[in-house]
Structures are given as structure tokens and as C-alpha cells.
Image (cartoon, rainbow, N blue to C red):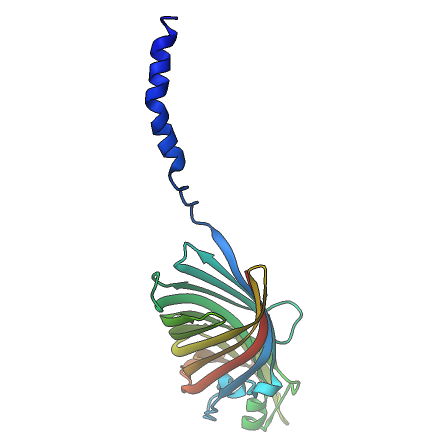
Length: 289
């Protein structure tokens, strides 16, 4: 009995403390990565590259120019939210293959309560250069050569960053990004074998391109509007547009071999700059969680 009394007094004394703690609001759960939006979209791409037509082969002269209605895009995007101020967007899309061959990763950070933020990301997409064997068919009429059409898939890798504006309404949203991109075309090699008419002279012309990088302007715009909602989730339509523009070039080392590898000459060729412009416009449906 003597031992129970102190224990009872202690229990009565600390009970209000535990009671007060129980009445405190719950501690917010730690930040986690959450899915904010998923979208499926389709659209078109316009690509325009001005030709130079110089005295040396310029691979960008043979880039496939296209209008929006000639180049079909199909893609899927996922938007993730972390800690309210970080937003990650993942876009996978394709133009001429069932398997997605293009990718864009983009991270946006925006202070709470602000409509201005910063974004940065990476983008990879292919485009084609076609028919560049025609240069030697025109320039070297005295030589026989393979007349089959040459085609090469170029891979453009872009790192980009810039300020962004993001506005959120009750049923609409708008984002505009003003990015600068550092775009790089990966190197490749091509060779042409020729035989002179009415002669035994044979030669091989080898091109080895260099890694070609340029700074480009890369603005983006996204607008969306909800069309239906249920249980806190929303379905809507969105329009996206982007443009990648600036001057591009492909420099290369050129080697000409006549009769044998020992009898050869080499030179470095710096191609002229081309006005390069790629525009994507898409429309799709989204689901906001």
C-alpha cells in the first residue's frame, strides 16, 4: 500500500502532460514524391534548316525539312510533385517508331506563393539527313560512285535552363518558360568510294564529323483547362508549343585516299552556320490527381 501511493501521485501529476500532447495537431508527414498529372498527346513538328550550298559537302544541307502536318508526334507525359516547390516532368514521345525515341526531363522549382520560378532539364530527339550522296554525284561527274540514297539519323542532345512563369486558376493553368539550350549533335563518319571514268584511278573520300555544339533559344508554352472532375480528380485538355532556334553547324575532318592508303591528303572543314528552327505543337488529354 505504501508503494502504491507514490505511484498514484506520479500518475496523476503526469497525466495532464500526456493529455496535452495528445491534443496537439499531428506532425505533418515527411515530404514525398507524388504524381500530379498524367497526359497523352499528339501533334506535329516543323523543322526548317537553311541550305548553304558551298563548295564542300555540308551535311545540314540535307536535313529533312518538314511542315507541322508532315511530321507526326505521339507522346506521354508524367508530372511529379515534391515538397510543394519542386516539380519534375517526364515526356517520352516518338515520331516514326513504335518505341519512344525521344525524351525530355524537366525540373521546375517555384517558391511557395510565387508565380515565377526556375527550370532546367535535358532533351534528346532524332532527326534525319537524307540524300547527301547527291553532293558527289553533282560535284564529281567524271567519277562513278554508289548512287543509292544515303540516310543518317542524327541525335540531338540538349541541356537547357531558364526562368519560368506558372499560373494556376480554379480550372485552368498556364506555364511559359524562357530557356537557353546547349545543343550537341553526336559525331559520325561516312565514306564514298569512286572510280574515274575511262581510267583505273580509284579514290575513297572519308568524312569524320566533330561533336558540334551550339547555344539555342528554347521557349515553351503549356495551357490546360479542366473539362470534368470527380472525387477530387480532374480531366482536361492541354495545348503545348515549343521552339528550338539558332545557328547550327557540323564541322568535320575530310580525308581523300587515291590508289592506296599511303597516298592520301587530309583537311579540316569548317561548315557554314545554318539557321535552324524546330517547332513542336501538340494537343492532348490529361488527368490531374
